[in-house]
Image (tube, rainbow, N blue to C red; front, top):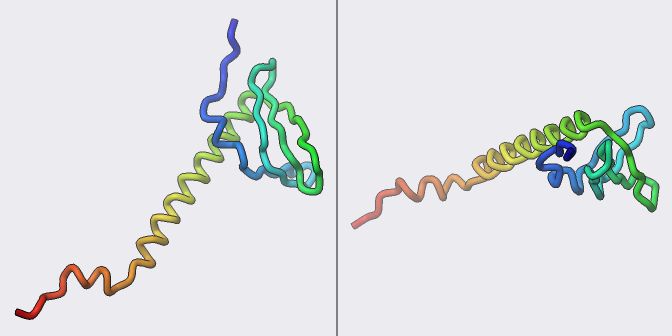
Length: 100
């Protein structure tokens, strides 16, 4: 029987995660869902090699959802920044009357 997979895990690749228990953070460099429990490969700060971390499917789903929410929030902030930095002259240019 096939194991259920968490969708959109590719969003985690390159993300920074934090391990509060060990007070460390690292970058996700790999994900393996072919095992009984998912495994993520993390390069922790100060380490040269990735560590394989076994997690539950629920934990993996939570990580994906957090990554997605952070991505949406960053996109909203980026859109706001573009709007906020549009030069006033560019906005006024569309309403300026031209002399005949």
